[in-house]
Image (cartoon, rainbow, N blue to C red; front, top):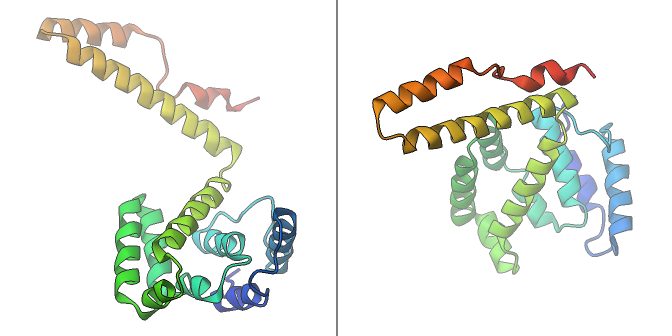
Length: 192
């Protein structure tokens, strides 16, 4: 289901700025808005567009319209998509800085006393947290298994770096080859 960013922002801006007084009231507002868009408050959707809208609701409740307008911009949404799909936060930071430095909206935010870079990075942090919440149990298990392999590889590389001779490296290689450790040990443990 494709949800219009314009509709999300119009509903968010219908909440008068400064009327959300406490964390409980804010959470209640966020839950109502998520449900209005048929989004499960406990489980964000797994696609990029769904995560972006979910993030906009989570982040944007109680924010001024000018800040929300930043995340309506196609250039900003596109930068998030590119950074997310290529796992490269540098793309996001560069595109965000360029947009905020060159756009009238960036200037308007600064003129209002709002730090647009701070807001941009806060939104990015919320986006990453929402994206992490889309992971299934299997994804978590596989991620942990990959992290375990990375740690083991790091240890092996450290040991090899300390070996002064080719013969020492061959001996280490033989030792590793003789170990009975599967590459992804957690894969077998997914059957509880």
